[in-house]
Image (tube, rainbow, N blue to C red; front, side, top):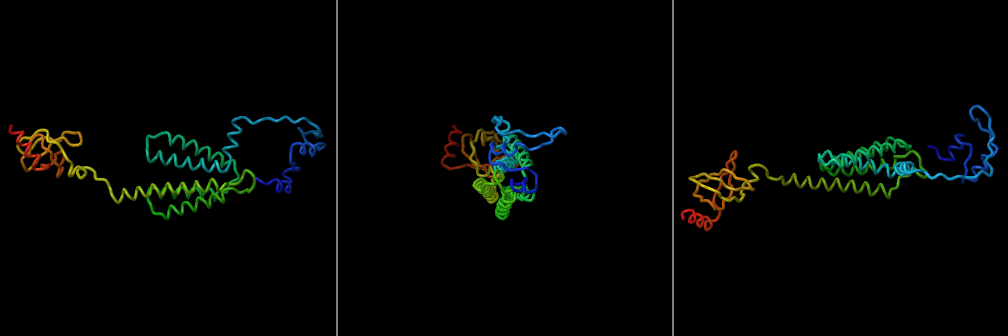
Length: 268
């Protein structure tokens, strides 16, 4: 986790070379311990063979990029949250779990600051809570905690150990935007809750199927219902629901002209 210069000063390494040719030149003639025996390196003029990394090593190189690791963590968290809120979707939960494990694996290989990681996780948690319980304060606080955590995440500043704000900034903005958007929909739903049960059927237009005395059957929402009324109604009339008691609808006629025609047809 040390930089090249710091490692050289603390004698963790023997020397720093700019390229392979300089490495072979500096290593030539040095004495090393090999299986308990002293050996002198003869590296001057050696042929260099380049071995390309396989697909797995290349994949690990991509995953252990700090920016990719953070994005994998975000995808993992939101995939699992979506699966919990919408059980049965399966794919978001599977993808989220895989991304979360890969992100944790990458962070385990990086020299991370656990305070920064804790701030990022706290920010994501605040944004998730903001999506379900809109307060704006949690949303802004979550975005701030996420950005501060990203700035503190890595202990080392250097090539390969830098957080790109071109990646983290939009990710934080997108996360905050999704939280505020979900919160606005929930707030609107709370202010105008949908009618359910009997209240949802009040004023519903129905067709009278059969009628005898003060009772009969009507067609409502594609289903056959028992109904009663305090006024004369005939089969074929249009009516509307005024009340629901258990599984019996109370209805009344709609439109005097239409009902009159219906009554004449019933008399014929």
